[in-house]
View (cartoon, rainbow, N blue to C red):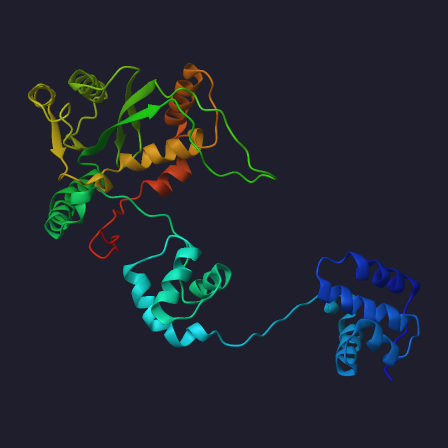
Length: 351
C-alpha cells in the first residue's frame, strides 16, 4: 500500500478543493486524497469515490510526484474524429463556400458526408484543418476584374513607384489626396469589459468633412475642413496651402477620380500653381496611402468613444490629425509603408 504523510495544511487544502474546485474530475481526485489522509482503506476510498483501485493508485502517484497541482492537470486524448477521412472533400468545399457560422458549417458537413456533428465539434474540426474566423475585406466590385487588376499593377510599377523613388531621393514631393466624411454617429468597436456595454448614438445628421493631403515621405498632413460639403473650391484651397509650403521642388498629388477633383477648374488651377495632378486608375483605393490615415483616425478617436456634442466630435478628429505625425509618429510610420495591396492572388467571395 502506498504511504503518504500529509501535513495539516495539505489536509485543509484537500478538504477545501474537494468541494470548491470548478472541475468535477479534480474534485473527485481531491476527495480521494483527502480520504487517504483520513487513513481510510483503499477499498473504502474506491467505494466512496466510485473509482477503480488502478485509478486510485494513479491519483496517489500523481500526488506523490507533484502535489495537489498535479491533480489539477487534465489531459484528454480522445479518439480520432470520423471527419478526418473526409477532410480533403470538406476543405475543397469550404474553399469555395466558406461558412458564416459553425451551425451553417455543421449543416454543410452533414450534407456532404452524412456525418452529423454539433456546432462545437465542427468548430474544433475547422480550427484543426487551419480555418479561423476572419473579417471579410472590401474592394469595389469592378476591382476584381483581371484587366482592372493588370491596369492597377502597371500603374503602380511604371508610374507610382518611380515617383516615390524620386521622393525618397529628395527630388520631388509626393502627396496622396482624398476626402473623408465623418458622420456624427456611434462607431461601435470592441472593449475589454465585464459585461456588454451600450453607448448612445447621436442623430447622424451632421458630417465633418475633411479633405487631406499626406506627404508620402515625411507624413506631413495638410487639411481643409468644413461642415457642409467638399467641392472643387475646397480642392483649390488645398492646392493653395500646398503651394504656400514653398518646397522648391516639383509637387505631385496622387488622387482619385472624384468629380470635384477631376474637373476643369481644379486642373487649370493646379497647372497655374505648377502642381502635377496624377489620377489613380478607377476602383483603386488601395493605392491611395491616405485611406490608411482615415482608418487610423477612426481607430484612435471614434470607435467605442462617445461625443454628445458635434463640436467635441470635430475637435477630436482635428486633434487626432494634427498630432498624428508627432505623438503617434512611430505608429503612423508603420501604418504608412509603401507596401500596397495586390488583388491578383487573393480569394474573392463567390457570387
